[in-house]
Image 1 (cartoon, rainbow, N blue to C red):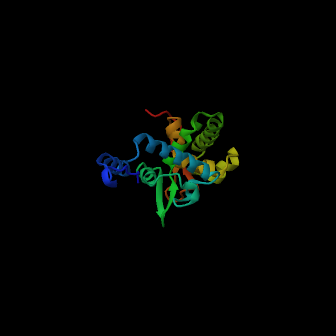
Image 2: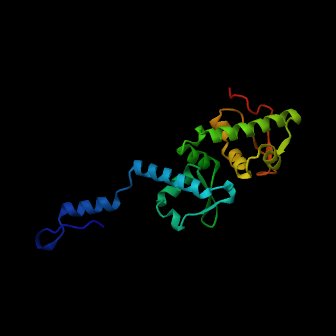
Image 3: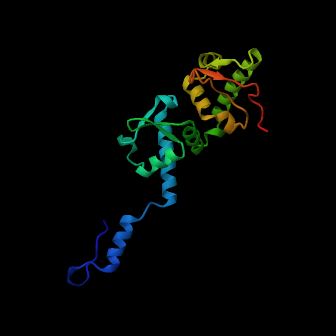
Length: 191
């Protein structure tokens, strides 16, 4: 609470009282809220490390998240950057992962471009072998040398669709996280 300046007989002045009320009720600026969202996403990406999105649960009360404002968690959920899983725990979504990577301009790095090229080549080649068939994450790992978390997070975040502007792949609904469905139009430019 702001300190009150004293008027006559030690009573607070009206201007001091108004200033105190405004400062106590004033919300955080939109600019600061956006900055806190960006800070939160970058921190979550760093904490994710080499795990899959579903394998990293966020406990908002942990000390490493103390600089993330309570309203920011709400905003992250509203923007579908995180999703509640249970008991006050959240996971970073594909949208949140992609946005966090974009904050670091990772979509333009040679390493990410090479990774996407390897993944796309393997998935495109799988169409010619068996149109409409699923491709296991294991076979992608063996063929490309890409780590499992990279493959899974790339599919979850729809990086091919968003960064390459091409038709991408998705999970087989009955085998999410292990079998990738590659449509016949995979890799084609969107029209």
